[in-house]
Every structure is written in structure tokens, then in C-alpha cells.
Amino acid sequence: MNPFNRRTAIRIAAVSTLLAAIASPLAWFSSQESEEESIVALAMEESRHLLDFNKAVSLEGDDARQHAELAAKDIANGLFDIAEIYSRDGLKLAEAMTEEGAKVEALLPKHGKPQYAEASYESLHVEGDRWVLRVFVPLKEVGKSAISGYFEGVRVVPEWQKAQIFSNSLIYALMVGLASLFCGAALYPVMVHLSADNERKAREVLDSHISMMEALGRAIAKRDSDTGAHNYRVAWIASCIAGEMGLLGKEMQSLIAGSFLHDVGKIGIPDAILLKPGKLDEAEFAIMRTHVQQGEEIVRGMGWLDGAHEVVAGHHEKWNGTGYPRQLAGEAIPLAARIFAVADVFDALCSKRPYKEPMGFEAAMAILEKDTGSHFDPRVMAVFQPMARAVFDRLAGCDEEQVRVLLQGRVRFHFGM
Image (cartoon, rainbow, N blue to C red; front, side):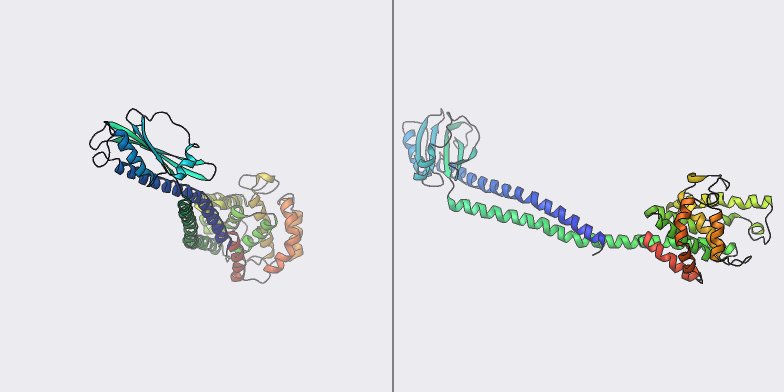
């Protein structure tokens, strides 16, 4: 499992577990409340049926108490353990209870005369383990809105019903918890697939960008009567130095792109000057220097190539401020440009060109060491010197394709391909 998939799995698992931990208790309480309300609703409906004035009793007249007592006894033998019936004035007309109801009656809170207009209930726990539901129902004759009396009933929830409610609530909570976990498990392969697809497309885009960078670099090299090998070599050397100095991520990516495209501005230099076999005069050299500014204009604002700007703009600056085009000095020169300057001069000295033979390692290093502090950043040189011999030996005899493969390994590592 790659790092992204591992992180995705951990995050989805954490979120799913958190959701399960939150949703399961909520489902538990919701189920308990639903079961409780179902019991109460059934009890209220039963009481209304038994007290339907068109069918059973009337709470008015001389026989009101007798009718109420009969109704109370019927109700107490059904869903309720205590049944109390009151007149519209709040006078208790009848009370009946079961043996279980008698045990809890004294433990219940006392209420005054009933005055409620809507049915309601309360859930109580008495003596720790007894669960009591107490309902309050205003009584109305069918078709009339006036209250004719009141019914108050108490149901002591039996153990079997409590066990059933507990079991139902537990199953419901477990189902919700498992659903949260299964949802996370189902999301993981979808997220991995989408991520892999997105990563593939990103690699394709990045690969096309790098191919464009290579093509542009080779085109400039060809114009300069050179192969693209120099661009590959200096980009590889610069990335090796930068790696030792701790550059990573965008800084390294910008350095590699800038190293490869450092002379892109030469596309605007006339052939008569660019390809002149002899030494340039002052006017010609002034025109040649404009390749830096033209290179800046080419890479500036080109999305991911914009990071190449530091090397393109600063690769001819010198540590002592005698370079061009801005005569920057010391750390005012971007670090990427200071690193590239060492790589560029080292490769130029050690490589064969149409107008010169390659210089030996010791001779090339002697020139770099002599110019340290004037042309080159001493800190960059201090990093490069211990690794210079290994770099020289690694590049010795490499053709363009071989050095391209070398750089490709660095590109794939630092660009995450």
C-alpha cells in the first residue's frame, strides 16, 4: 500500500469510527424514545377507546362515579397498572390499580388538580430499576371540543418489555454503527480509484510539460551548434548539489527546469552573433547579453515554468557583483542561480566543444577554486568540492541519451512521477 492509500485508509477509518461512535449512541437513544412513545401512544389510544362516551361511559350525572369506577377497573386490567379518572372540575371519580401499581403508587410524584388541554406523558425511574410511564389524557366527547374529564394512567414497564426494548435499541445502534463503517469501507476503493485516475492524469500533464521543456532546451542547444547533452548534464549536476544542500519540492523542481532552460533566451539572438566562430566585439557582446532578458520574458508567467525564472535571470550573475544583467552580489543572487553557476562552469570546462577540448578534472577544479568568492558562492563550492570527483567520473563518456536517463531519474524523484 502506497503512502497516499495508507493515509486515505487511516483517515476514512478514523472518520467512519467517529461517525459510528456518534451515530450509534444517538440511534440507541432514538430507538429507546421511539419504543417508549409507541407504548405511550398505544396506552393513550386504548384509554380513549374505553372512555369513548358514545360507547362506554359518561362522566356527568348521578351515575358518573359508578361509570368511572367500571372504566377504571377495565383499564387497570389492560395496559395500565394504575388508572385514575377525574371530572372536568378535577374531582377524582375513580381509581383502580393492579398489585404492581400499588407498589409504585407512593413513589410517584404528586400532581394537583388536572388542568391540561393536550395529552402528554412522563417517563420515570423509581426505586432504581422500575421504569414507569405516566400518561395524561384530557377526555372529550366525540364531536365536541370541550373537556369532559381527565384520565391519568400509570404503566410499570415489565421486565420482558424492557429486555425487548433493550434488544431492539441495541440492534438498531449496531446497524447504524456498522452502516457507518461499511460506508467508509465502500468509500475507500472509490477514493483510491479516483485518486489513481487523478494521479495518472497529473502524471500525463507533468510528463507533457517535461517533454516540452526538453524539446525547447534541445531546440536552443541545436541553434547554438550544440547537442542537448549540456542541458541534461548541468541540470543533473545542479540537482546533485542542491540535494546535498537540502533543497526539495518546488525549489528543486524550479532549479531543474531553470537549469535545463537557462539559455532559452538565445532563441532571440541573431545567428550572425550566436554562431560567430571568433570573439565577439563589444556591440555584439551587448546583444548576446540580452538573451538573459529575453529568456526571462519567455518563462515568466508560463505556469509551472515560471519557477525557472531565478536561474534564467541570474545564471550570469557573479558573487562579487561583476556579473550581468543586474550586477547582483552575494546572497542577493537567488540560491538556485548560485548553484547553477557552479554546475554550468564545471560542465563547460570538462566538456568537449567545437572550439575546444575537454579540460581535466584537476585543472577544472583549480579554476573553480580560484574563482570561489569572486564568481562562485563559497558555501555552494564547499558542498560541491567533496562530490566533484564522483560527478566527473559519473559523466565521463556519457552520451546525450545516457545523461538524459540520469536526469530522468532525478526528475521522476523530485517531480513525484
